[in-house]
Length: 169
Image (cartoon, rainbow, N blue to C red; front, side, top):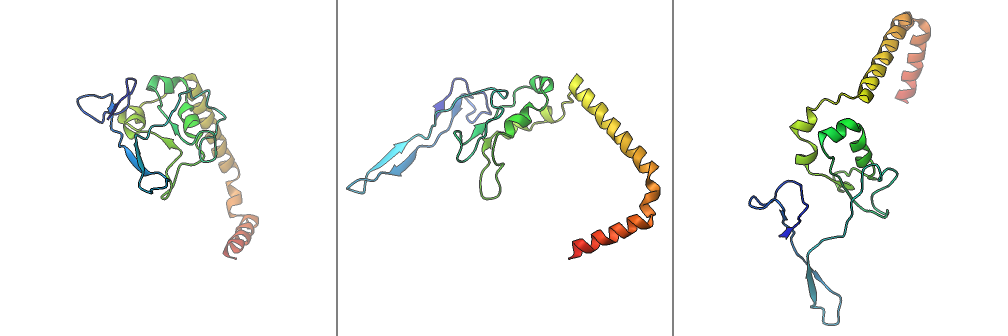
């Protein structure tokens, strides 16, 4: 058990939320007698930075930093800086798959919780984005209704037949 004074993640031990269980690892050491081993606690030096400062970084295998640990901050921070969490998560080269773990770490209690998922972000940026989405949807509807007669035209039907044949080959 290791006590981290500034630990703010989910509690592992009920009586002290600053204690994190870390299991010692025993490894064999190359030596002449072939029976030497070393037991150590697997801690690695790390450092923190802001989401803004990590823009442009690439995290993953073969990079200067192998992993990134993300604390998304408060809802207020996310409301004031929409997209910041995406910036942090997208620094990793890979999100992992069924055989390899991702290049980032997060705890579901911190990142995916009811409070965060149900929070509606209402800032000038999100309002402008929503207005632009509505404008594009209106243009799309107008274009569709203006040119809907083409959907049954011989030219379009011939194009569809040609495209379908190409996909079958």
